[in-house]
Image (cartoon, rainbow, N blue to C red; front, side, top):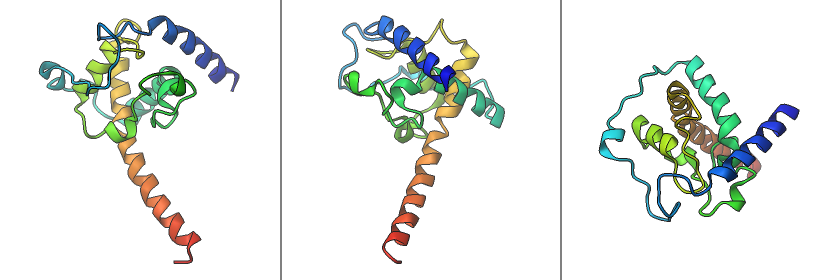
Length: 155
């Protein structure tokens, strides 16, 4: 627990130093954030495996969860201090190409730091493999919630 707390403090400090240093001259705005076509077309050079997913999850917890939340909902401890709020990655995963996520992670925008030069290229791709699995947990949660509702209503 102490390691997680220390990691969050370090990340918070680092994030504040990167605020406004992303891929937009004026920071993050409310328009849709599109990656360029060349980035979207890029394939993930890291084959998806459970090991890659686990590495990506570890990177996510260490570097992304303080803003995006442990489950990727955009509800991390810092989310209420960021305008606009961090993206709900669970609804985005599975709908965007790997290259799109990798470019956005590398480039950053507004309060989201550009991770290129901080994370290794391979770490970014492992992170993409993990992010792409978050939509699966949305489906599992929705099914579970429906089942739980049925139990509480006597169905």
